[in-house]
Length: 73
Image (tube, rainbow, N blue to C red; front, side):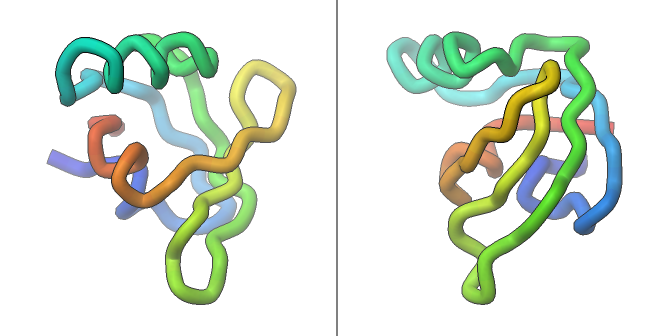
C-alpha cells in the first residue's frame, strides 16, 4: 500500500482508496480528491509538511496526516 505521502516530487498518481472516517474523509473528498482522480505532486516542504499537489487543474496543499489517508498507485 502506497500513500500520497510516499509519492515523489514530479510523480503523477491515481487515488485507489480513501482511509479515515466521517468528517475527515468527507473533507478530503470536498477538496476534490475522490477515488479514481489523478494527482500530480508538485512540491514537498523541507520538513515534509505540507505537500503541494495539482488536482483537476488547481493547486492544493495537504497536511502529512491527510496525505497518509490517501492510498494511491
